Length: 108
Length: 112
Image 1 (cartoon, rainbow over the protein chains, first blue to last red):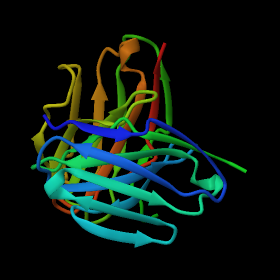
Image 2: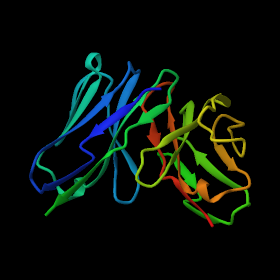
Image 3: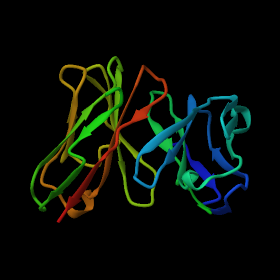
Image 4: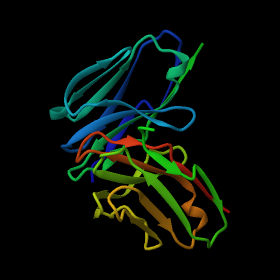
């Protein structure tokens, strides 16, 4: 099956700093989603991005499907950005394969 | 409510008991997915439905796990004869066909 690897596994930032999270996947995929799991355990949709670049406020994402990776950019980080960020790729048929996540901690 | 809902939010049971977890998808969403998430890990696929038809159950760990969606809306995931290793967060998601998936809050299952 498809392998999904996220890096870094952990990240500590000072409030206001920028960061880039990476997701590599081992095979062609139908689609790709980025999620934020907040400290209360809720999975929040960030981006649905099979290819190209999207932006939403301080967050943006780029997927280069031909090279099998996606990047999530967080600018001017805030303490509320803390949590775990998951990348998930969609196999043909619809099921999502998740990476192990990047745990982000933003310090005030 | 416009989102995916799940009940109960927390379930504590004794080993050997059966449990039923419920998922109510977003109205109009054809596809419904079940995932299981262990602490510190990403969610892992269990099974999914399009309407009432179970399309893929390859992720169900053994025959103690079953799922149904009889009317193409609400779904129930049943675990029979629970074991301690079944303790996890059980998550449900829904989507239009092969489209962005939206997750519910999950059911935290603890088997004592």
